Amino acid sequence: MGSEDIVSRADSLMRRRRSFVAGTPSPGTADVPAPPPPALAETDEDIPVLTEEVLPETPAGTAPRDRFDETLAARLASEFAHTLERRLAAELPSLVEASLAVLEADLRRGILDTADGAIKDFLARREQLRLPLDEPDSGAGKGS
Image (cartoon, rainbow, N blue to C red; front, side, top):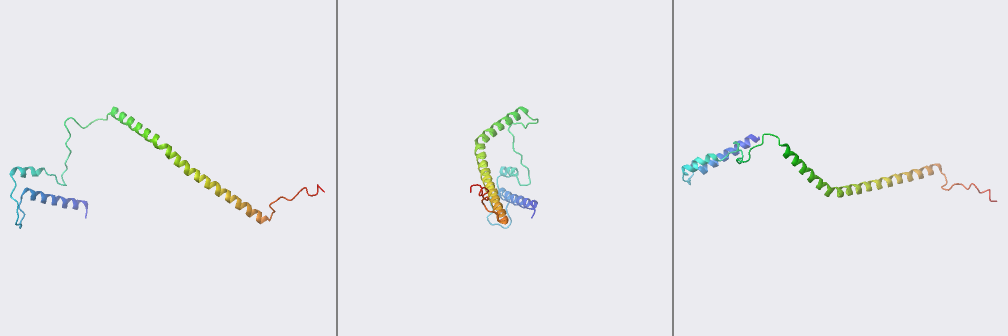
C-alpha cells in the first residue's frame, strides 16, 4: 500500500468523522444525534484534512525576511564560535588524555611485540649456528 493510499484512506476517515460530528445522519443507525446548529456546520469547513495545506499564521509584527541580514549572521557566528570554544575547552583535555592513554598502550604493546620477536629470532639463529652463548676465552694461553 503506497503512501498516497494511506493518506487518502486517512483523509476519507477524517471526512467521515467530520460529517458525523457535523450531524449528518448515518444510514441504518438507530441513535442518530440531533443536527447541529447552523453556526457549527459553517465552522466545520475550517477543520483541516490531511490533503489540505495549513500554513501557520505569522504575527503582524513578524514579517518574513526577504534579504540576508549580515549583522545578524555575524552575531550568530560569533555566538556559535564562543559556544564551541567553551565546549572544546571543557572537553578537550579529557579527550586528549583518553587518546594518549590509548596511544601509550598501543606503543607499549608494539615495543613488547617487537622485542619478543627479536629475542625469538636471535635465539633461533644461535640455535641454527650452534654457537655457544659465551665468547671463547681468547686469553687462555697468556696467563700460563
